Length: 626
Image (cartoon, rainbow, N blue to C red; front, side, top):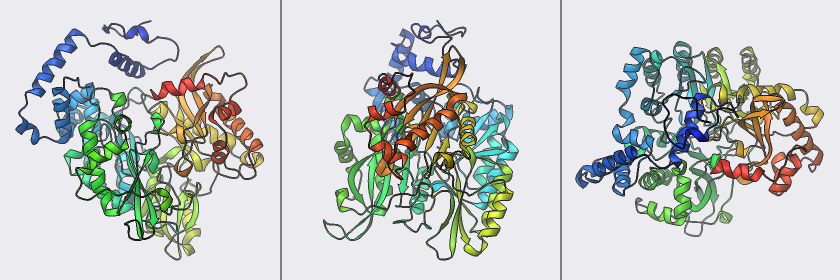
């Protein structure tokens, strides 16, 4: 059947999207319709428009192009080759979204939410129209390394209270979001954030997102290298260089200094990992970084080691060079194939690095990983509880933030707590919680009491330690499942049962609302992907289940295990999976290690619901990664 949308006359597209089935919202229908339209042949009008734009781009004098930002030069080259720009690339071609501030001010004065092309442009300033999930805006911030000072936390709390819904969400990039922002508050919100040193520019759309690092940078007893200065250096290099904006698609960079809490660097487009090297092979003794490329877990890939060994001071110039090669050669016509991964798949890593070398003043050098000393294995519960710092007499407190949501009162209280008992520093983690650092051991009791007064706890819990949920259908127009409320239901269901089950180590449970996989369900021990469910006894939201993902030295993609579990059944299904694992594991074997010693098909069959066919599940996985 065709979509029930008046005026939709695109042939061969609407007929493919049923009105029944999975109860798609209008925004989801629009998303699917756009995807299907991209697969169909362009109309005569579209071909004519493309030809005109191509001619205009091809006729631009070379001298004029030389003065343009790299992204605009790449667009002209794409058009000169007779190719068609995607819708988003056309928006960028017509007007630089970084110049959209007057439009933000205009919409704010009119109390209007952005529509049409403006929705894409405003993402360059950290603003999302999340309608219809919420008839409001969301603002995603930027805080390099996830570290912010108490005065910044207080400013963010004030902004969320004055202009948003009175709460903030911690994200899986050690970042914060403010939600439920009316149109009239967009410009005042950004103004207040900028004045507090929080600049969201480039936190969305086709840009380098928040630069992440270890939350224990500078305080970790196992640390090889403090990566916070690198995170900050890259952050400011991005903010002050237009050449670092307008990429073919989003781009992620992470630095891991060998700390006890992972930065998940192998899930990024560029992931740097600190190692120690003894003198020899042309290298002096010291700490270096290995670099991996092409991580994009939503498409089923972890970053691949390049063999490079880098001095710390070489990491930022190399990142810039890689970005420039990607900007010049990424796909500007097909959004599905525009990520760095697809350039690497087409060229191979050696060719990509050869092109990168041409932009560098120093030679790229290689050393086998076997010649490097790796950091100890991470502590999967290290982001909760009390832990000693490398500074004698000081500790950090890992604070549990259920599904990453804090009220403004809690955020203010945490800022005050960090100032009274620590160094006035809050450290966000990719596990959607935070650390309070530099607390003297003799003041821990008072600090923990103050934490409890905020309704928060530091107590490690094997479920809470690994429970991650994106915004989902409750706050994102693409979300097909209610991730945060389902995560809370899982936690409530298992509270008090983990001891009876015998669960003695954290299990990572990642809930993501759609195939964009913001919560990275493919690297969870148990990954849940939102979907619509329509069966005789239930019609509504649900989740597909994936089993056996991992990261770092235990990195692997989770395999499909069960389809279309209705939301009310999800907590019991998680308990069933845990019971199977605990019954069949070796003594003290973690979930990740248990999964690693089973072939994919065997693992899927082990956890599949008896009534479900397992053989077709690999087709589902392949379809989602297409």
